[in-house]
Image (cartoon, rainbow, N blue to C red):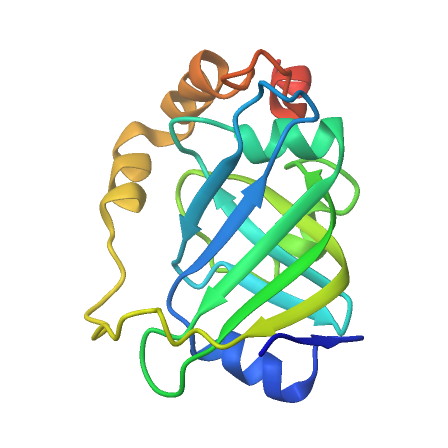
Amino acid sequence: MAKVFDHITDELQKFIAAQQVFFVATSPLSATGHINLSPKGLDSFRIFSPHQVAYLDLTGSGNETSAHLQENGRITFMFCAFHGKPMILRLFGQGHTVLPGSPDWETFYALFPNLPGTRQIFVATIDRIQTSCGTGVPLFEYQQQRDEMVQWAAKKGEAGIHTYQQQKNCISIDGLPTPLGLNLK
């Protein structure tokens, strides 16, 4: 049965910390726009308070989350138990993008690992916390985090990443601008 919480409890924080992967979902306002759902890992999620969370975003092939947050702010995080007691946890909220060089960047970035290809940090205020049973989620055995993305970014270097972001991360697949696209020089 689903259960709704008014804040991220200590028990839910422990559940989040035990997960090796989480999912992020955002959507444009347009009925014909594409919903974005992305898996994330690499020790990139942080809980700042019972109602505020963030994750470190690395350079990738698209930048949908950033475009959607700029347009409407809606974001959902999902954590699934792939081992142990079954549970799914969803955090619903409003988010925004924090870019390198912005006034809040150093405050937030200091709380994450220093990874090549870091693009931005997404900060969200959570207004609904909900669990569900998760009994339909299969059991998996964790092996390790993948390092291909980090290796790719390290090989490209800062200048290569900057060029890649200008080419691939300034406009969403639905034509929405991203804050990164507006702020790249």
